[in-house]
Image (tube, helix red, strand yellow):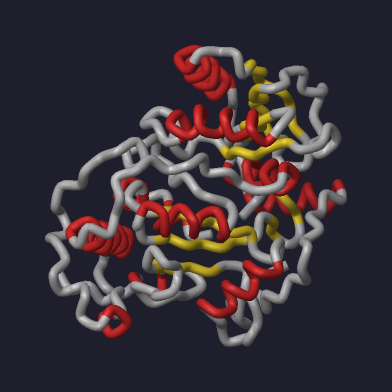
Length: 74
Length: 260
């Protein structure tokens, strides 16, 4: 399958040795299947510190917790 | 936020090998600068949403950043969420294979100040777990005990966490009486006030803590939200959210704006 989402240039070819997409993943309590929702860190400083400490890549999203200035809705 | 990607089971499963960071746009000046350095839309200003996958140093984007995962994955295949999950698995496999990932437990995924965390909980339609502690040492101890529970299979992603520093930081139906300990709160639909679902003392054992949290979460009934109704009623009631920074999102392009 072609991975058009990658920026291979940004990694300078580092992605070539990637394991197959369906390779088994080691499971710790931080990466169990969970209950169907992503668990998020809400601050960059804290999340980045965790990424550096654990060597995990970062999934980053920003969203405004209001819609048309009304709270309670992304 | 693009639920078509982020709520897909494959993406959620793949996310467990990442550190997932969700920033509230327009709530922190430093974070706003960071977001602008990652992605700027056609408006040239910070837009409501940003998406990126970055290396563990937070510097290199590993897929095309954008306003949503669409830019990187939509159009790649007929199953973009599956493509996103597969890409995430490849990325985490790379970092594991090259010995860059330490097999250590993650800390508690907290969501900032209580006022914002309550709103985030309402947006996510999940309870808010509030930590109370009289000292930093006590707070750290409680966070360390709570972290493995927050990442457990039963609880991951089912609550938002925050630390209460002052008594009046949250508008609740009654004042929390447990110190130190946890208060589990059901946010109102607008995330402006909350109802106490349970209070759990820090003297509870780990087993009791987990059982009490699960029981509290089971008592929570997620609100059914229709966005048009929510916005309409919110405006009528004057329920507005005051951001820390000015909102600079230009809105959808002409032709994609909803009719009034």
